[in-house]
Length: 392
Ligand SMILES: O=C(O)C[C@H]1C=CC(=O)O1
Ligand SMILES: [Mn+2]
Image (cartoon, rainbow, N blue to C red; front, top):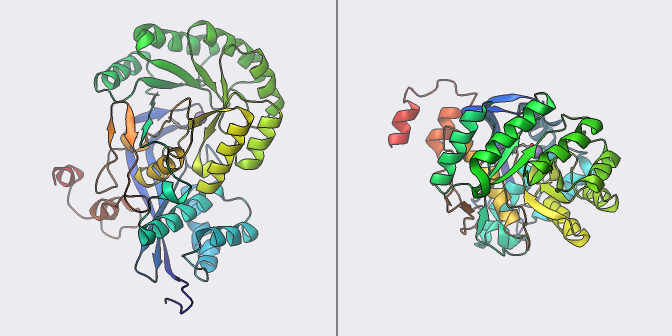
Protein backbone atom coordinates (compact mmCIF):
# COMPACT_ATOMS: atom_id res chain seq x y z
CA UNK A 1 0.00 0.00 0.00
CA UNK A 2 1.28 3.48 -0.93
CA UNK A 3 -0.49 6.03 1.27
CA UNK A 4 -1.97 9.26 -0.16
CA UNK A 5 0.17 11.38 2.14
CA UNK A 6 3.35 9.98 0.59
CA UNK A 7 3.98 7.33 3.23
CA UNK A 8 5.44 4.10 1.88
CA UNK A 9 4.39 0.93 3.66
CA UNK A 10 6.66 -2.04 4.30
CA UNK A 11 4.60 -4.94 3.00
CA UNK A 12 6.79 -7.89 3.88
CA UNK A 13 9.68 -8.62 6.22
CA UNK A 14 11.71 -11.59 5.01
CA UNK A 15 14.54 -13.19 6.99
CA UNK A 16 16.71 -16.04 5.73
CA UNK A 17 19.52 -17.98 7.39
CA UNK A 18 22.45 -18.88 5.15
CA UNK A 19 25.37 -21.16 5.99
CA UNK A 20 28.54 -20.34 4.09
CA UNK A 21 31.76 -22.37 4.43
CA UNK A 22 35.04 -20.55 5.14
CA UNK A 23 38.07 -21.04 2.87
CA UNK A 24 40.05 -22.44 5.84
CA UNK A 25 39.45 -22.83 9.57
CA UNK A 26 39.63 -19.36 11.18
CA UNK A 27 41.17 -19.80 14.65
CA UNK A 28 40.23 -17.21 17.29
CA UNK A 29 40.80 -17.33 21.06
CA UNK A 30 37.15 -18.20 21.75
CA UNK A 31 36.20 -20.36 18.76
CA UNK A 32 37.35 -21.85 15.48
CA UNK A 33 35.12 -20.99 12.53
CA UNK A 34 34.53 -23.48 9.75
CA UNK A 35 31.56 -21.63 8.33
CA UNK A 36 29.85 -18.28 8.64
CA UNK A 37 26.13 -18.08 9.35
CA UNK A 38 24.37 -15.06 7.91
CA UNK A 39 20.92 -13.72 8.76
CA UNK A 40 19.81 -11.96 5.59
CA UNK A 41 16.93 -9.48 5.71
CA UNK A 42 14.76 -8.17 2.90
CA UNK A 43 12.24 -5.40 3.41
CA UNK A 44 9.69 -5.38 0.59
CA UNK A 45 8.28 -1.87 0.26
CA UNK A 46 5.04 -0.71 -1.35
CA UNK A 47 6.83 1.39 -3.97
CA UNK A 48 8.51 -1.77 -5.29
CA UNK A 49 11.87 -1.11 -3.68
CA UNK A 50 13.46 -3.95 -1.72
CA UNK A 51 16.02 -3.08 0.94
CA UNK A 52 18.55 -5.70 1.99
CA UNK A 53 20.40 -6.02 5.28
CA UNK A 54 22.61 -8.56 7.04
CA UNK A 55 23.24 -9.60 10.62
CA UNK A 56 26.17 -11.90 11.19
CA UNK A 57 27.91 -13.03 14.35
CA UNK A 58 31.12 -14.94 14.99
CA UNK A 59 30.83 -18.55 16.14
CA UNK A 60 27.13 -18.43 17.06
CA UNK A 61 26.99 -17.10 20.61
CA UNK A 62 30.70 -17.43 21.38
CA UNK A 63 31.60 -13.82 20.52
CA UNK A 64 28.62 -11.71 21.56
CA UNK A 65 25.14 -12.04 22.99
CA UNK A 66 23.20 -12.33 19.72
CA UNK A 67 23.20 -15.33 17.35
CA UNK A 68 22.01 -15.45 13.72
CA UNK A 69 19.11 -17.71 14.69
CA UNK A 70 18.18 -15.44 17.61
CA UNK A 71 18.34 -12.39 15.35
CA UNK A 72 15.95 -14.03 12.87
CA UNK A 73 13.56 -14.86 15.69
CA UNK A 74 13.76 -11.33 17.10
CA UNK A 75 13.11 -9.71 13.72
CA UNK A 76 10.27 -12.08 12.81
CA UNK A 77 8.55 -11.83 16.20
CA UNK A 78 9.26 -8.34 17.52
CA UNK A 79 10.68 -6.07 14.80
CA UNK A 80 8.31 -7.10 11.99
CA UNK A 81 5.04 -5.93 13.66
CA UNK A 82 6.62 -2.49 14.19
CA UNK A 83 8.08 -2.36 10.68
CA UNK A 84 4.77 -3.28 9.08
CA UNK A 85 3.13 -0.14 10.49
CA UNK A 86 6.10 2.14 9.70
CA UNK A 87 6.81 4.54 6.86
CA UNK A 88 9.71 3.19 4.80
CA UNK A 89 10.48 6.69 3.49
CA UNK A 90 11.39 7.71 7.07
CA UNK A 91 14.21 5.36 8.14
CA UNK A 92 15.25 7.50 11.13
CA UNK A 93 11.67 7.62 12.41
CA UNK A 94 11.40 3.83 12.20
CA UNK A 95 14.75 3.38 13.96
CA UNK A 96 13.64 5.74 16.74
CA UNK A 97 10.40 3.75 17.16
CA UNK A 98 12.38 0.48 17.31
CA UNK A 99 14.70 2.06 19.88
CA UNK A 100 11.75 2.92 22.11
CA UNK A 101 10.25 -0.57 21.95
CA UNK A 102 13.24 -2.90 21.74
CA UNK A 103 16.11 -2.98 24.21
CA UNK A 104 19.55 -4.03 22.94
CA UNK A 105 19.50 -6.35 19.92
CA UNK A 106 22.15 -4.23 18.24
CA UNK A 107 22.92 -6.69 15.45
CA UNK A 108 19.26 -7.04 14.48
CA UNK A 109 18.82 -3.24 14.57
CA UNK A 110 21.82 -2.88 12.29
CA UNK A 111 20.36 -5.30 9.73
CA UNK A 112 17.07 -3.38 9.79
CA UNK A 113 18.73 0.02 9.42
CA UNK A 114 20.87 -1.28 6.55
CA UNK A 115 17.78 -2.52 4.72
CA UNK A 116 15.85 0.71 5.37
CA UNK A 117 18.72 2.85 4.06
CA UNK A 118 19.27 0.54 1.08
CA UNK A 119 15.61 0.94 0.08
CA UNK A 120 15.71 4.69 0.71
CA UNK A 121 18.87 4.98 -1.39
CA UNK A 122 17.30 3.01 -4.23
CA UNK A 123 14.26 5.26 -4.18
CA UNK A 124 16.24 8.51 -4.05
CA UNK A 125 19.14 7.44 -6.29
CA UNK A 126 21.69 8.09 -3.54
CA UNK A 127 24.38 5.79 -2.13
CA UNK A 128 24.05 5.05 1.60
CA UNK A 129 27.31 6.91 2.25
CA UNK A 130 25.68 10.03 0.76
CA UNK A 131 22.53 9.54 2.89
CA UNK A 132 24.85 9.45 5.94
CA UNK A 133 26.29 12.87 5.17
CA UNK A 134 28.57 12.11 2.26
CA UNK A 135 31.68 10.07 1.61
CA UNK A 136 35.17 11.51 1.83
CA UNK A 137 36.84 8.54 0.12
CA UNK A 138 35.98 5.91 -2.49
CA UNK A 139 38.51 3.31 -1.35
CA UNK A 140 39.28 1.79 2.02
CA UNK A 141 42.57 0.13 2.99
CA UNK A 142 41.87 -3.47 4.03
CA UNK A 143 43.89 -5.69 6.34
CA UNK A 144 43.83 -9.51 6.39
CA UNK A 145 43.67 -11.72 9.48
CA UNK A 146 46.23 -14.49 9.70
CA UNK A 147 44.49 -17.15 11.79
CA UNK A 148 45.25 -20.52 10.24
CA UNK A 149 46.63 -21.84 13.53
CA UNK A 150 50.10 -22.45 12.01
CA UNK A 151 52.98 -19.94 11.89
CA UNK A 152 54.38 -21.32 8.61
CA UNK A 153 50.96 -21.30 6.92
CA UNK A 154 50.34 -17.75 8.17
CA UNK A 155 53.64 -16.55 6.67
CA UNK A 156 52.88 -18.25 3.35
CA UNK A 157 49.38 -16.70 3.36
CA UNK A 158 50.80 -13.23 4.06
CA UNK A 159 53.34 -13.58 1.23
CA UNK A 160 50.53 -14.50 -1.16
CA UNK A 161 48.50 -11.47 -0.08
CA UNK A 162 51.48 -9.16 -0.56
CA UNK A 163 52.17 -10.65 -4.02
CA UNK A 164 48.54 -10.16 -5.01
CA UNK A 165 48.71 -6.57 -3.67
CA UNK A 166 45.54 -7.41 -1.70
CA UNK A 167 46.76 -6.72 1.86
CA UNK A 168 49.86 -5.23 3.45
CA UNK A 169 48.63 -5.08 7.03
CA UNK A 170 47.93 -8.25 8.99
CA UNK A 171 46.11 -8.97 12.22
CA UNK A 172 47.19 -12.05 14.15
CA UNK A 173 44.74 -13.78 16.43
CA UNK A 174 46.46 -14.70 19.66
CA UNK A 175 45.51 -15.46 23.27
CA UNK A 176 44.69 -19.13 22.88
CA UNK A 177 48.21 -20.37 23.61
CA UNK A 178 50.68 -19.54 26.38
CA UNK A 179 52.02 -15.97 26.23
CA UNK A 180 55.59 -16.83 25.23
CA UNK A 181 54.37 -19.18 22.48
CA UNK A 182 52.08 -16.46 21.13
CA UNK A 183 54.79 -13.80 21.18
CA UNK A 184 57.20 -16.20 19.44
CA UNK A 185 54.55 -16.74 16.74
CA UNK A 186 54.08 -12.97 16.24
CA UNK A 187 57.85 -12.39 16.24
CA UNK A 188 58.43 -15.05 13.55
CA UNK A 189 55.82 -13.47 11.28
CA UNK A 190 57.16 -9.95 11.86
CA UNK A 191 60.72 -11.10 11.08
CA UNK A 192 59.60 -12.86 7.90
CA UNK A 193 57.67 -9.84 6.58
CA UNK A 194 59.83 -7.02 7.96
CA UNK A 195 58.93 -3.53 6.84
CA UNK A 196 56.78 -4.84 4.01
CA UNK A 197 53.79 -5.20 6.33
CA UNK A 198 52.17 -3.78 9.45
CA UNK A 199 51.59 -6.45 12.10
CA UNK A 200 48.83 -6.08 14.69
CA UNK A 201 47.36 -8.55 17.20
CA UNK A 202 43.87 -9.27 18.50
CA UNK A 203 43.67 -11.09 21.84
CA UNK A 204 39.86 -11.14 21.89
CA UNK A 205 39.84 -10.58 25.70
CA UNK A 206 41.79 -13.78 26.44
CA UNK A 207 44.35 -12.24 28.82
CA UNK A 208 44.02 -11.07 32.39
CA UNK A 209 45.49 -7.68 33.17
CA UNK A 210 48.79 -9.00 34.56
CA UNK A 211 49.41 -11.14 31.48
CA UNK A 212 48.44 -8.18 29.30
CA UNK A 213 50.95 -5.91 31.02
CA UNK A 214 53.77 -8.33 30.16
CA UNK A 215 52.36 -9.24 26.77
CA UNK A 216 51.91 -5.69 25.49
CA UNK A 217 55.50 -4.79 26.46
CA UNK A 218 56.85 -7.92 24.73
CA UNK A 219 54.81 -7.21 21.60
CA UNK A 220 56.05 -3.61 21.48
CA UNK A 221 59.64 -4.89 21.60
CA UNK A 222 59.18 -7.16 18.56
CA UNK A 223 57.66 -4.48 16.31
CA UNK A 224 53.91 -5.09 16.70
CA UNK A 225 51.97 -1.94 15.72
CA UNK A 226 48.67 -2.31 17.58
CA UNK A 227 47.08 -4.42 20.35
CA UNK A 228 43.34 -5.10 20.14
CA UNK A 229 41.13 -5.83 23.15
CA UNK A 230 43.73 -7.62 25.30
CA UNK A 231 41.45 -7.98 28.36
CA UNK A 232 37.80 -8.41 29.29
CA UNK A 233 35.31 -5.98 27.82
CA UNK A 234 34.18 -5.34 31.42
CA UNK A 235 37.59 -4.16 32.64
CA UNK A 236 37.59 -0.58 31.39
CA UNK A 237 39.87 0.69 34.14
CA UNK A 238 42.33 -2.07 33.25
CA UNK A 239 42.27 -0.88 29.63
CA UNK A 240 43.06 2.65 30.83
CA UNK A 241 45.97 1.36 32.95
CA UNK A 242 47.37 -0.70 30.05
CA UNK A 243 47.02 2.24 27.70
CA UNK A 244 48.89 4.53 30.07
CA UNK A 245 51.80 2.05 30.24
CA UNK A 246 51.94 0.94 26.62
CA UNK A 247 54.42 2.13 24.01
CA UNK A 248 52.08 0.97 21.21
CA UNK A 249 48.40 1.83 20.67
CA UNK A 250 45.70 -0.13 22.51
CA UNK A 251 42.43 -0.63 20.62
CA UNK A 252 38.96 -1.33 22.03
CA UNK A 253 36.69 -3.79 20.19
CA UNK A 254 34.40 -6.08 22.21
CA UNK A 255 33.98 -3.35 24.86
CA UNK A 256 32.44 -0.90 22.36
CA UNK A 257 28.70 -1.32 22.02
CA UNK A 258 27.73 2.08 20.72
CA UNK A 259 27.91 5.78 21.57
CA UNK A 260 27.52 5.41 25.36
CA UNK A 261 30.51 3.07 25.60
CA UNK A 262 32.46 5.32 23.23
CA UNK A 263 31.75 8.34 25.43
CA UNK A 264 32.79 6.50 28.57
CA UNK A 265 35.96 5.17 26.91
CA UNK A 266 36.86 8.68 25.80
CA UNK A 267 36.19 10.07 29.28
CA UNK A 268 38.28 7.32 30.90
CA UNK A 269 41.15 7.58 28.38
CA UNK A 270 40.82 3.79 28.07
CA UNK A 271 41.82 3.34 24.41
CA UNK A 272 44.02 4.95 21.77
CA UNK A 273 41.95 3.51 18.93
CA UNK A 274 38.35 2.35 18.41
CA UNK A 275 37.48 -0.64 16.22
CA UNK A 276 34.10 0.57 15.00
CA UNK A 277 31.69 -2.16 13.98
CA UNK A 278 28.27 -1.23 12.61
CA UNK A 279 26.58 -4.26 14.19
CA UNK A 280 28.15 -3.93 17.63
CA UNK A 281 27.40 -0.18 17.57
CA UNK A 282 23.68 -0.84 16.98
CA UNK A 283 23.50 0.32 13.37
CA UNK A 284 24.99 2.65 10.80
CA UNK A 285 23.90 5.90 12.47
CA UNK A 286 25.11 4.67 15.86
CA UNK A 287 28.49 3.81 14.30
CA UNK A 288 28.62 7.37 12.93
CA UNK A 289 27.96 8.65 16.46
CA UNK A 290 30.85 6.53 17.78
CA UNK A 291 33.09 8.05 15.07
CA UNK A 292 32.13 11.60 16.05
CA UNK A 293 32.90 10.92 19.71
CA UNK A 294 36.27 9.40 18.77
CA UNK A 295 37.13 12.35 16.55
CA UNK A 296 36.20 14.82 19.27
CA UNK A 297 38.34 12.93 21.80
CA UNK A 298 41.35 12.46 19.51
CA UNK A 299 40.91 8.68 19.43
CA UNK A 300 42.14 6.93 16.26
CA UNK A 301 39.74 4.97 14.06
CA UNK A 302 39.75 1.50 12.57
CA UNK A 303 36.90 0.03 10.52
CA UNK A 304 36.05 -3.30 12.13
CA UNK A 305 34.14 -6.35 10.93
CA UNK A 306 32.06 -9.17 12.37
CA UNK A 307 33.25 -11.12 9.32
CA UNK A 308 30.06 -10.24 7.54
CA UNK A 309 29.41 -11.43 4.00
CA UNK A 310 28.91 -9.00 1.12
CA UNK A 311 25.87 -7.08 2.38
CA UNK A 312 27.19 -6.26 5.86
CA UNK A 313 30.67 -5.60 4.50
CA UNK A 314 29.44 -3.08 1.95
CA UNK A 315 27.13 -1.46 4.52
CA UNK A 316 30.20 -1.01 6.76
CA UNK A 317 32.18 0.35 3.81
CA UNK A 318 29.56 3.06 3.22
CA UNK A 319 29.82 4.16 6.85
CA UNK A 320 33.64 4.09 6.99
CA UNK A 321 33.83 6.02 3.69
CA UNK A 322 32.28 8.97 5.52
CA UNK A 323 35.04 9.07 8.21
CA UNK A 324 37.33 12.07 7.68
CA UNK A 325 40.22 10.19 9.24
CA UNK A 326 40.72 6.45 9.34
CA UNK A 327 44.25 6.22 10.66
CA UNK A 328 44.35 2.43 11.07
CA UNK A 329 42.42 1.42 7.93
CA UNK A 330 39.81 -1.35 7.93
CA UNK A 331 39.45 -5.12 8.08
CA UNK A 332 36.56 -5.40 5.62
CA UNK A 333 37.70 -8.71 4.15
CA UNK A 334 34.70 -10.85 5.27
CA UNK A 335 33.60 -11.94 1.76
CA UNK A 336 37.16 -13.10 0.99
CA UNK A 337 37.04 -15.57 3.90
CA UNK A 338 34.01 -17.34 2.40
CA UNK A 339 33.99 -19.97 -0.33
CA UNK A 340 30.84 -18.54 -1.93
CA UNK A 341 30.10 -15.10 -3.32
CA UNK A 342 26.62 -13.87 -2.33
CA UNK A 343 26.62 -10.81 -4.58
CA UNK A 344 26.01 -10.63 -8.32
CA UNK A 345 29.13 -8.51 -8.69
CA UNK A 346 31.74 -9.34 -6.02
CA UNK A 347 33.26 -6.49 -4.01
CA UNK A 348 36.39 -5.10 -5.72
CA UNK A 349 39.66 -5.57 -3.82
CA UNK A 350 42.76 -4.20 -5.50
CA UNK A 351 45.86 -2.26 -4.58
CA UNK A 352 45.39 -3.14 -0.89
CA UNK A 353 41.94 -1.50 -0.82
CA UNK A 354 38.22 -2.16 -1.16
CA UNK A 355 36.25 0.06 -3.55
CA UNK A 356 33.05 1.50 -2.09
CA UNK A 357 30.18 1.00 -4.57
CA UNK A 358 28.62 4.22 -5.81
CA UNK A 359 25.20 3.03 -7.02
CA UNK A 360 21.94 3.77 -5.17
CA UNK A 361 21.58 2.36 -1.65
CA UNK A 362 24.22 -0.25 -0.95
CA UNK A 363 24.98 -0.34 -4.68
CA UNK A 364 24.93 -4.15 -4.77
CA UNK A 365 22.58 -6.98 -5.82
CA UNK A 366 22.25 -10.47 -4.39
CA UNK A 367 23.05 -13.53 -6.47
CA UNK A 368 19.67 -15.23 -6.09
CA UNK A 369 20.90 -18.67 -7.24
CA UNK A 370 23.58 -18.58 -4.58
CA UNK A 371 21.08 -17.52 -1.89
CA UNK A 372 18.77 -20.37 -2.89
CA UNK A 373 21.67 -22.77 -2.70
CA UNK A 374 22.96 -21.66 0.70
CA UNK A 375 19.73 -21.13 2.63
CA UNK A 376 19.42 -23.45 5.59
CA UNK A 377 15.69 -24.00 5.12
CA UNK A 378 15.93 -25.02 1.46
CA UNK A 379 13.42 -27.86 1.19
CA UNK A 380 15.37 -29.50 -1.57
CA UNK A 381 18.71 -27.97 -2.35
CA UNK A 382 19.29 -27.70 -6.10
CA UNK A 383 21.46 -30.50 -7.41
CA UNK A 384 23.71 -28.00 -9.23
CA UNK A 385 27.18 -27.94 -7.66
CA UNK A 386 28.87 -24.82 -6.30
CA UNK A 387 31.76 -25.34 -8.73
CA UNK A 388 29.30 -25.39 -11.63
CA UNK A 389 27.69 -22.21 -10.30
CA UNK A 390 31.06 -20.48 -10.13
CA UNK A 391 31.80 -21.42 -13.74
CA UNK A 392 28.54 -19.67 -14.57
O1 LIG B 1 37.94 -8.42 15.48
C1 LIG B 1 37.39 -9.44 15.85
O2 LIG B 1 37.47 -9.69 17.01
C2 LIG B 1 36.61 -10.33 14.96
C3 LIG B 1 37.01 -10.50 13.57
C4 LIG B 1 37.55 -9.42 12.83
C5 LIG B 1 38.52 -9.91 12.01
C6 LIG B 1 38.70 -11.25 12.34
O3 LIG B 1 39.49 -12.03 11.83
O4 LIG B 1 37.87 -11.57 13.33
MN1 LIG C 1 38.62 -7.83 17.57
